[in-house]
Amino acid sequence: MDDEALMSILEDAGLSPYQAEAYVALLDLGTASATDIADACDVPDPRIYDVLRDLESKGYIETFQQDSLTARAHDPDEVLEDLRSRSSRYLDAAEDIEDRWNQPEITDHEVSIVKRFETVENRARDLVESADDQIQLGVDTERFYALKPALESAFERGVNIKLSICTEPGGEVPDAADIEGTCTEARHRDIPSPFLVLVDRRWTCFAPHHRSVNEYGILVNDRTHTYLFHWFFLTCLWEIWETVYTVRTAETPTTYVDLRHVVRDLEPLLNEDATIEVTVVGYETDTNDPVERTGTVVDVDYTGSSIGRQEPVPLAQLAGRISLTLEADGETYEIGGWGAVLEEIEATEITVSDVRYG
Image (cartoon, rainbow, N blue to C red; front, side, top):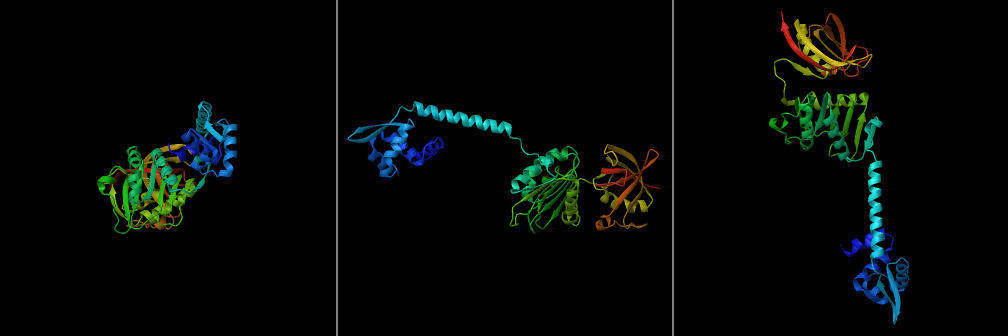
């Protein structure tokens, strides 16, 4: 340990800077006059006498007259015992603080503003690792690789994951081999984007892109606020961008987590008199109890719907109320999407198991 570090510790133990300097100098000198001690450190000559008397009163040194005031360090046992006692108390205090401190739960707040991007990324990773149903995320290539292990684990658990990789124009995009096993579908947006992760229709982790002059983040635990970010994801990060990877095939079953995409894909089939069998997983809107129904889609309804449409409806036209009618076990059920209140079931997952004609 160098002199500066030792003096800093002695100051923590209660010595003044001059006292610490004089004591360290005296340890090196052994026995020395006050003048020699002052010359060996930065204590001014007029102050050295008071400094030595203070050190003597604290038990660090002893002074005596030998032509002039002379000092030598005491046997350090007492000093060492004091330092060790302080060290032990610091350790005890550190352990007590650690025992008493609980990481603040984001569940205590609907919206939190944080100052560091690392806080947002770490929270996003934790949420991805614990996701149950669905994840939507818009990230750059670097952040994709940082979150890749958590995404692989979530995908392996059966979580539906939509990944938008946002780069500079001409920027590097992970190849299909790297994306495989991390998501249900991936698209590429060649415009830099904020960092955005949405989990289970409730959680949002947001931070501006790296060119922003301000570094901050938003953490949300609220379905309504997250729904707004969901529309930002759909319209800005997803809908118009090229698909670079998908696990979907032309064959059924096909699983959806957004009712709007279900309606858009199934409406032309219904208009061709197809029989469409689906399984709906979600919650009963009046009790919030989990529910699963398997049956046949008999109708879709949305603001401005038109009979006979043969092409998928534009996403913007699906921004209002939208529902699907399901016949199952002799009963008819109205199925709504995210935030449904008028329908009987809020769907979190819809799987198309069969499409037949005639």
